[in-house]
Length: 119
Image 1 (cartoon, helix red, strand yellow):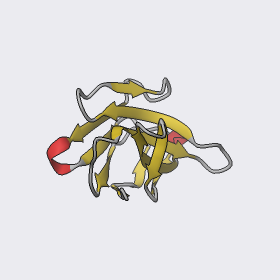
Image 2 (image 1 turned 120 degrees about the horizontal axis):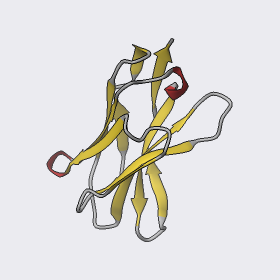
Image 3 (image 1 turned 90 degrees about the vertical axis):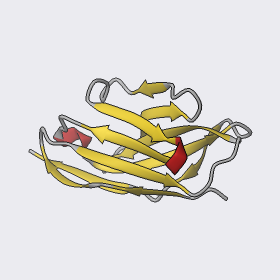
């Protein structure tokens, strides 16, 4: 069983920055990609960014491209989301997730961390 624990959320003013972390309990060859998702009140969960463990290929949603940066530390089994130039519309619960090759979907999820951006 893979466990994901997010941290780093909080309250920040518009224009500010936060860095989220996602600690992965263990890695196997079955998990190839890590992703960040978010869910705002009354809205569906949406994709934010992803990164592969090997090679570090990244992909971003258009709404965060140029402001957010996803990275990983393979030695620490940790994935980060650096969020700059935050906007009130970035307010949401942020989740990290691990995609498994077998299921070809984001199979493991963390409990989420709240990010609130005040105007």
